[in-house]
Length: 108
Image 1 (cartoon, rainbow, N blue to C red):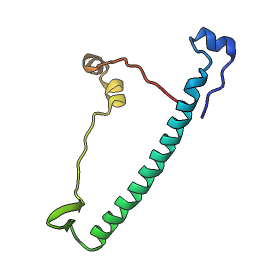
Image 2 (cartoon, rainbow, N blue to C red; image 1 turned 180 degrees about the vertical axis):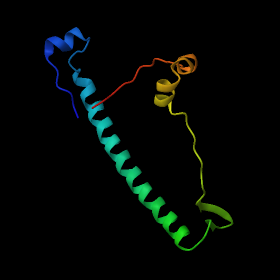
Image 3 (cartoon, helix red, strand yellow; image 1 turned 45 degrees about the horizontal axis):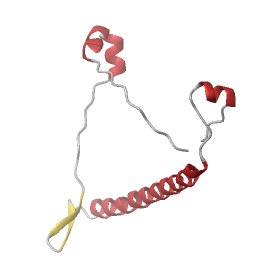
C-alpha cells in the first residue's frame, strides 16, 4: 500500500519528489518484487508436493543419482516469550534486552 502524505508535511519530514531518473528504477524494483513473490509461491507449492509424496509413502526422503534431493525432518524451535518475561520479571528483561537501531529502505 502506498502512503499518501501532505506536501508540507512531506517537506517537514525530509521527503522530496522522486527524480524522473529514479522512477524507472522504482518500477523495475516493484516488478521484480512481484516476480519474486510469485516464484516463492510456486517454490512453496512444489516443496509441498515433495513433502506430501514423501509423507504419503512413509518415506524419509528421495534420492536421485545417489544424492538426497528431498527430505522431511522434524525440527524443534525454542524462543523466549519476551512479552511474558517483561510482564513477570521486568528487571531480568531489562538486564538482558539489547536494542539496536538500523535504517530500512522501503520502496513502493
